[in-house]
Amino acid sequence: MFDILFIVLFVLAILISGVFFGEYMAKVFRGDKTFLSPLLRPLEKFIYKVSGINEDSEMDWKIYTLSFLSITIFSFISLFLLQEIQHFLPLNPERLGPVRWDIALNTTVSFVTNTNWQAYGGENTMSYLTQMLGLCVQNFISAGVGIAVLIAFIRGFTRNETHTIGNFWVDLTRSILYILLPFSIILAFIFISEGIVQTFKGYEVIKTLEGLTQTIPLGPTASQIAIKFLGTNGGGFFNANSAHPFENPTPFTNFLENYAMLLIPVALPFTFGILLNKRRQGYAIFCVMMILFLGGLALAIYSEFQGNPMLSKLGIHSGLNMEGKEVRFGIIPSILFAVTTTCTSCGGVNSMHDSLTPLSGLILLFNMCVGEVIFGGVGVGLIGLLVNAVLAMFIVGLMIGRSPEFLAKKLEPFEMLMAVISILSTPMSVLVFSCIAIMTSAGLASLNNLGPHGLSEILYAFASPTGNNGSAFGGLNASTLFYTLTTSLAMLIGRFTTIIPALAIAGALAKKKFVPPSSATFTTDVPLFVWLLVAVVILVGGLTYFPVLTLGPILEHLFMKMGMSF
Image (cartoon, rainbow, N blue to C red):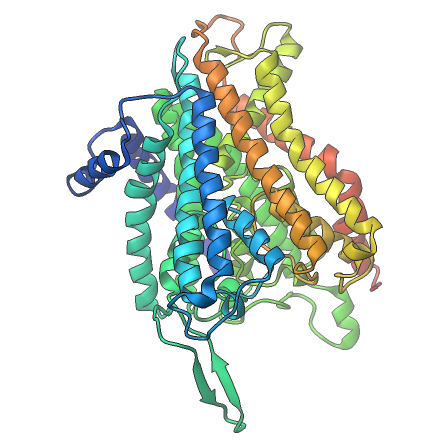
């Protein structure tokens, strides 16, 4: 009963705060006055002045895309070089050397694309300066880019016969200055009060009860953990991520980290509805996301409480699966965290996904393989679901025999081409790279498990980077040259084949005039549309991945029920 109450209270808390935060973000991007404006508006103007930005000047989708690419390239070069020269720089009390070139490349791609996939142990690889100036800064920039692109995408639906979709630099500045930075500061102070470390001291060497010595890593952690979750980044300061007591010490911090992961993704559908002047449309999109989220969460919780029947042969009670979970959290908070992190493309983990039951692993894989559209990362998750909505309306148009339209805009071949590119790029990346890994000795050499579980590990290793998620299934060594290079490509594919087609669609829609509703118009803010979009997400994901998921987690589940191991 307590477990059900915990889930209900969590959902209510995130829903209520999401509504209010959605209103706040809508005001920010409409340029309206907010409660932070007296403090931040002068700073915003100062940034524009010193940067030479005219906030009243707007861009077409191509210039907007080039602006996004320019900051991505600059971030890539600066972060890569920072890792390679960190041994010459201050704030390196452990005197860590330069990062291995392929790990540095992988990490650079990872943090620039808001993936935060980590093929390294943070406390053994990155100096304090690299963590702060490199990784933490990219957490703000990459998350801000995602929000900015979403706002430009929304403008494609709200504008009538114009070539412009906003100013990238203004959208990015407001995303960071009004949304990510102030609330990360508040969250960081709360984390510090709860015991998450924040210090420049070097690592502590202590003597254990057995008389041995142990090195305790420290660092400026709380500040990075705040934006890690609020920006759905996921990169852990320590190798154990949020299973580490210095990143997530108490049930309260665990609740807050879950809450922070969902806050902006839950709020954005409401922002969407407000900016469209169609609040019911925002509610409909939110309902689609919540139905998919709660459905996956329920199945994962059920599976973990069933446990592993093979343990009963050893005289161990099999009604619960506590393997790989922190005792201070338990099953419900651990599964909620796992489902949330794979739905929001965050990638932070507080338990080992490799130790979950097969059906739970199936849910996590599905959440990422459908393109991170179930809330998803800040900005890009909602973009992904709206692209699926474009596909759904095209299907509706074919069914009723009229030109498809969505939100009073005609959908023509160009928009459908961009939507198909965006939707199909994820399965192509996941499946092609997984096939290469299965067929090569370099791909198989990293496995610690054989059979269907090993296949799940490989699928997860490419679903997570392609979905710009960053969480690790475990049981697979991802720090080899093969995986650092292939996952780097997967991250680039996942990022650019979502953002660039979305901006192209926005530019095309902004040029079009509004189509007045008629008796044949399919209403998109009613339950029928909600269930249609849910069905499209499930069917597209199911039909694409069903064969490989059958050979992976589904087959493993059947083996487990039969008492077979491998």
